[in-house]
Length: 439
Image 1: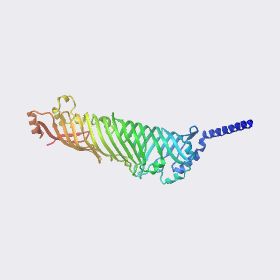
Image 2 (image 1 turned 90 degrees about the vertical axis):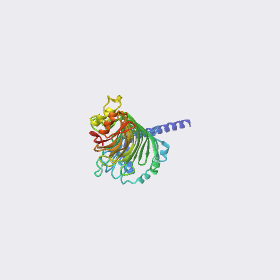
Image 3 (image 1 turned 90 degrees about the horizontal axis):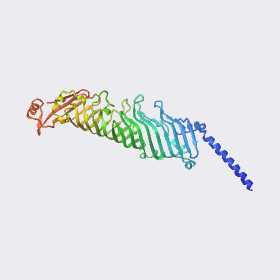
Image 4 (image 1 turned 30 degrees about the vertical axis):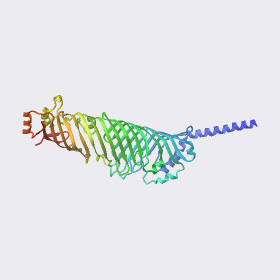
């Protein structure tokens, strides 16, 4: 009896070894099943999918894919919406036995995500004409992903130019970013318009339009057709920026909104993004701004940005004013401590700001040229650089009798509390301003 049991156990062990060996061989030769798997995925999702290589591990159950790609559908240009050199998914075993794919952890290594919007409102990650209910017929149900990690990824966003659907400039670019999303349930996310997926992201560099930042850190909220960066912090133009950024993909034209606070911004570095040649202003800026608008399907997709806020620049210069005669004449009224400074040097320059219809409008603007204070209002045409400002100059230091008499006769100035006040106008352009004392 003992001999029979021993023989049976040996036979069972041999069978188990053969089964495990066969399983190991199959798991290490997964590529032979890839064509059938890819065909099945494409049929059920409507997306063309590329997978170069795959491996499967048993303990723990994990799938690793290499060379994953999802090409752009028509009418988008040739290229890929998504490319992932390597990804790894740890899969829960028991839910899989009941037909549900539950991923404990999904890691995407160096993915490139390229969002493109079509003038008709279609995105390259959508399937034109593919019924979404086809997913219900799949043998395995999509469960959840407990943790999704992205390592050293790249994200791009652009819009095709209407009406020829030619590629437009990249509007959004986030490079070398890593992040984590938690508790992703696709069925809940798809069925509830208010559902959100939360996580965090950090990036080495990021760009929106012509604005660049580095060392970006932010919480991230993803809802159906909406991406929000909440409480973002970044370095930019030798200073710091913080606030919120939202991108809404609901309509034909994506819409963005940002509420930002910046401080320590070097004006020459900021203006270099928008102007060629020498900087039109120096100094350090702080600002509180709200900006937003639609991303148009044109060669200049951010042309219609609008917004409002306040700003203050300290200890700077307006170099284009150095050759203006009226500024040179007013230098005599400045504080003695500023005698060695250029005539265009100021201690503070600030006020409110509104961006609308390609114009920058200032309803309350003030500049202190070290004892020569100017207050006024006006606007600047963003395209032509045309200036149209009027204001009042106040000489802060009380003047003597002969200076006051000269000012009354030749500058049409008034005296208030012992200080001279006279009207001025600023016209011309940013590069060639015309500063004059008016009657």
